Amino acid sequence: MATDASLTETKSRFSDVLAWVMANPVLVAGVLAVLIPTMLLVANQSWSTEQGAHGPIVLATGLWLLWREWKNAQPHARPAPGKGVAVAFAILLPLYFVSRVSNIVETEGFLMYALVVTVLYSFIGWNALKILWFPLVYLLFVLPPPETIVAMVTNPLKIFLSESAVHLLYALGYPIAASGVTIQVGQYQLLVAEACAGLNSLISLSAIALFYVYLRHHANVRYSLLMFLAILPVAAFANFVRIVILVLLTYHGGEAAAQGFLHDFAGLTMFMTALITIFAIDHLFGLLLPGLKRGRHDEAAKLAQRRVTSGG
Image 1 (cartoon, one colour):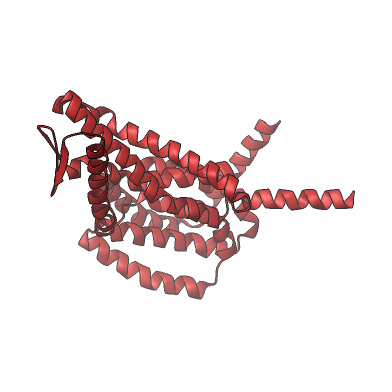
Image 2 (image 1 turned 90 degrees about the vertical axis):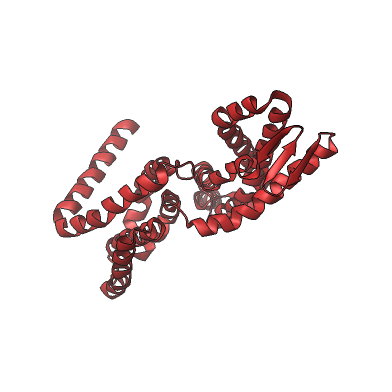
C-alpha cells in the first residue's frame, strides 16, 4: 500500500512538472539556454579534476533532495512579487552575459545558479524557498569555488601540516627535516604540495558531511553550520594522517611504495579518516548539545506528542 501511494505521488509530481513546462515553454527555453552551456563548461573544467570530481554526485543527490523536500514546500508555494523578480533579473542577466563572454567558470557558474534560483523564487515565493534552503545550499557544491579563496585557505594550512608531521616524526626518532617546499626523510625527498594534495578534497568533504548531517538528523540551520565549521579541522587532521603515512612509506619502503600509495590508496585513506572523524564529532555533539542536534521535525513531533498526552 505504501509503495502504491509513493508511486502515485511520484506520477502526480511528474504530471505537475510536465504541465508547468508545457505552460511556460519560453521561460523553460531561456533557463535551458543559460543552464546547459554553463553546466557543460563546469563539467569540462571542474568535474574532470580531483578538486571537482564530486560534482556529478552532488548534482544527482541535490536534485533528489529537492524532489524529496518539495512535498513540504508545495503547500506554501505562492508567486513572488513581480517587481523584485524583475530587479533581480535586470542585475543578474547582464552580469551573466559578461561572465559568459569572459569565460570565467567560477563567476559564470554562480551567476547561472542565481538566475535559476530567481526563476524558482518567482513561482514559489519566499516561504517555500526557505523550506528548500538545504538542497539549494547543497547544490552550490556542484560549482567550483574561486581558486584564489581556496589557495588562501589551503596554502598556509599545507605548510603548517607538513611542519607538524615533521616535528612529530622527528620526536619519534626519524631522520626528517623540512626545507622550504620539500620534506627530507633519510635519503628521500618529498614535495609539500604533493604530500598535502589531499586538502584539495576539502570541498568534497564539506558536501559529504553536510549531506550526512541533513539526511541523518534533518538538523536545523545552527547544527548544520556547526558541522560545516568542523569540516576544516577534520580535513586538516585527515591530511595530517595522509602525510605521516606517506612519509613513513617513503622511509621504510622507498619512493615506489609511496607513489603506489599516492595513486591507489591516498584518497581512500583520507576519506575514510575524515568520515570516521565526522561520525565521531557528530556523536560527540549529540552528547554535548542534544537540543541543538534535533531538527525541526523532531521538535514538531515532540510538541505534538506533548499535546496528545496533555489532551488525554
